[in-house]
Every structure is written in C-alpha cells, then in structure tokens.
Image (cartoon, rainbow over all chains, first blue to last red; front, top):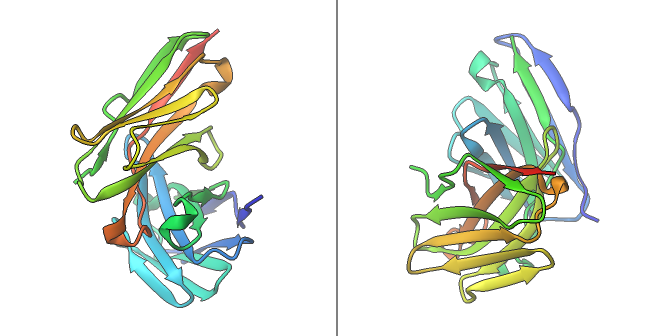
Length: 115
Length: 114
C-alpha cells in the first residue's frame, strides 16, 4: 500500500510564526503535492514538485514556500503565518508519467489553526 | 478561474437508490479524470478514474460517465449505502501539463439516508 505520512495532524500557531509541515512518502514517487482544503473551495494546489530540488507554483502559492531535498520528503513552509492560512493541508504523491494512471495518493491531512 | 466545477454542494439520497454526482470542466486539454471520496478529518481516497478515450468505466457499485463534447462527467453509485456518505471530489489532468498537475473541483457532500 502507498503510504503518505504527514508528521503533524493538528497544529496551533501564532500569527507571524514560521510553520513547517512535513510529508514523507514511501513509494518512490517522483511527484509530490501540497493542497489546502477550505469549505466551498475544494482542494486548491499550493505547490508541487516533480523531482528533487524542483518545484512549481500551483494555484495559490502566495505566503508559502516548499523544500524537496530528498525524493521521499516534501515540506511546506509558511514563512510568517497569518489567520487566513488556517486550513486543512493535504500532502500527496504520484508516480511520474501517464502510464501510471495518474492516481494521486493523499496523506491524512494536517489541521493548522493560526491565532 | 475554476476549471473543474461541481455545481451541487450537497446531495441527499435514500439508501438503496442511485446517487448521481456531476462535474463539469472547461479546459479541453484535460484528458484524464478522477473521483475521490473524503471523510471528515481524513485524506481523500481514490475511487475511480476514466481516460478521455473512453466514455464509461465501472468498478463495482461505482460507474463514471464521460461526455467529452459537453465537457461533463458524472459518478453513479448504485445502490447507495450509508457508508457512502462523504464529500466527493472530481479531478482532472492533461497531457499539456505533463500529467503532473491535477485540478480538483469544489466537492459535493453526499448524504445517504438509511
């Protein structure tokens, strides 16, 4: 079974704090993603990475950065947390190429509250 | 610009009846479509997918239909069960993006009433 593990399930941070959300996958997938889920807005892509040290902006990258130093690990960084970043954050991974069927595998999610 | 749209935020269905969830897309370059199911406080799980070379794909109680000319797909669940109560997300990807980027809809919350 594919396993995508998000290190923190629930976090409460103060406005202005730097926040790290960590994600590890164990299936040697090339592609990794960070989404956030908000009511009525669905899943919105923040950043994705298609290889080590490579990253691409998604639809809502403002206020976020990412790091991918190793293939299995993809970190989301909030440089200075703000209350509008209170959300559920979902990490995902997927093998490269169309032959894989393009299935994305998600982690359990990290609930972040910024106060 | 919402490229994948699920216009019904919620749907209620009696147990044993058919549930039909709809999804529309605007990007004609999308050629692979997926449905995900999500329970509260859990990550989404993959349900079923369909390639644009097909117009139907079945997996047990779940069937996805694709109408390319209308840029519309639907998920049918027959028969519906209380355990199907969840939020369902439609998603799409395309070769132009190297299949790397997957765009999700806003979700439809399905409630199956016993």
